[in-house]
Image (cartoon, rainbow, N blue to C red; front, side, top):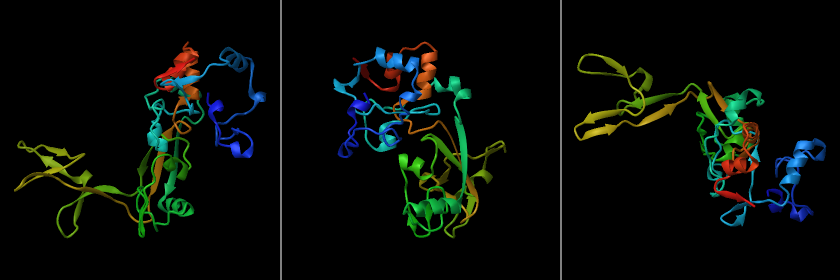
Length: 261
């Protein structure tokens, strides 16, 4: 289904390549009796969505526990490419290479990455890429490719920043972690999340901001999985097959509301 719809290289005299530009294919030398049998037994069958041939039956290595909407990764909303929780990869996580991973950047390294991509914003002050000469918002799959991460599924932590609240017009501030509330019995409770104060006009939410020292600290990016996370997980499909699910079950789990005929 994927191969029959590809025309990316038509101007070069062929339709599809064997690299990550299309989808990786290692050739018949990497095939075996099982894969040959799968091809033969499903010959002539295709995926359909709303009566039309599925144009982008994309897949990847592993999603780290959840696939992703195509809208969030590539900016186009495709009905059959919807994200969902994947309970199958976790059952075989111990055999998936580098299933959980992390990488560390200093602020200066992040600055270099941005500058090399033409995003000249000066010295990086925070992971949100706010600098001395402007700011740059990197969204969707560009986040993964810019930082050369293994997967679209990741979180960012570290740095020397902290969440603070301004306490007066002179710029004095207090860190969230150092604030407590005292109830009528005198019991102290640490504050977290959004903080509100009572004023003469009622209740108001305090504006929170993050501060990070220029050029210092490091940022740890932790994630799981490998690939863009849209469509079918190859390791998830492997796990489902080992649990006794059919190829139809697998395809209809990873591609939303499709039929096979």
